[in-house]
Image 1: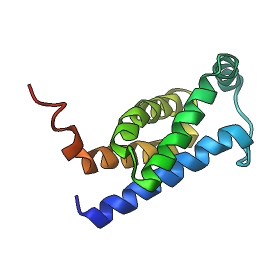
Image 2 (image 1 turned 90 degrees about the vertical axis):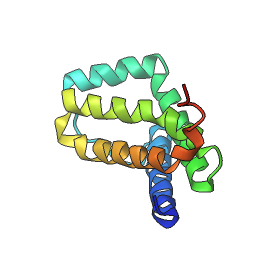
Image 3 (image 1 turned 45 degrees about the vertical axis):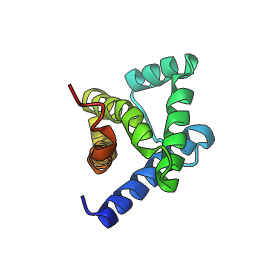
Image 4 (image 1 turned 180 degrees about the vertical axis):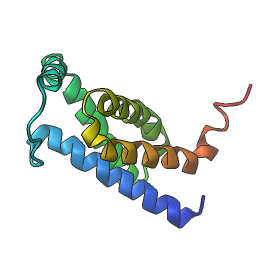
Length: 124
């Protein structure tokens, strides 16, 4: 991947997860009405502090990607959040799947950009 394209992908992904991670702490993006099943799901995640952990991962990943420090590691960790976001929207709130798919695509592109950092992990 071209280094300038990778830099744009890395910074876009970093800003994306930083903003949504901070939103979980400060609630500056309005959520709108949610179905009862979604409210129950988020209630369970909140009561177990899972949303706080996800927000922390997003904020740390955003900062790491923007400053290009530990980005390869944080992109791997963020992949679990990306896949869960897409699965959540595919099953419970399909009207909001666009940003989740954008997150997943940017995350995959970041992993491709960092592929040279993973080559030792993939040796048999």
